[in-house]
Image 1 (tube, rainbow, N blue to C red):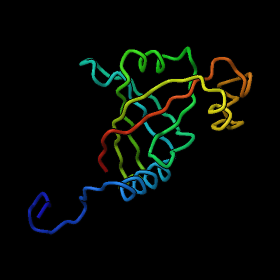
Image 2 (image 1 turned 60 degrees about the vertical axis):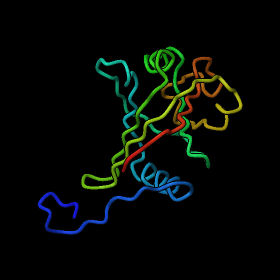
Image 3 (image 1 turned 90 degrees about the vertical axis):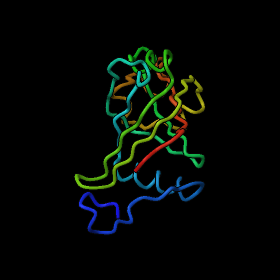
Image 4 (image 1 turned 120 degrees about the horizontal axis):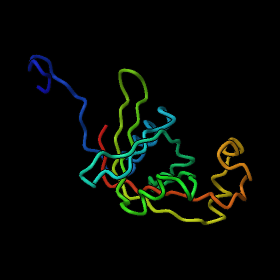
Length: 144
């Protein structure tokens, strides 16, 4: 019995590993569409949060984002690569929180792979905008 009142059985907790975990993460993240991307989570101070959408979740479970090299987010990741991503698929269910390690690169091929013309709102020079960086988040643990 997991219920608060201990009167009804619940089957809503599973320890998932491998492909089953990856499939669940991808499904929940896709349903949510975007996440709250949190940085400075281990500083002991308030952490910073902003909405972001992953461009891709790869077959290893890494989340890929595009970001500006002059953003607070990039500076915070450079100071502390530990991040948290919070997803909500609906008002009542499909919550996912992932912790991970973020890295920042300027890999031009990866930028081209991840580029979406909608990104021109933030990167006015298009795919070749010199401010574009790639953030890769490798999840280390999560809960849904």
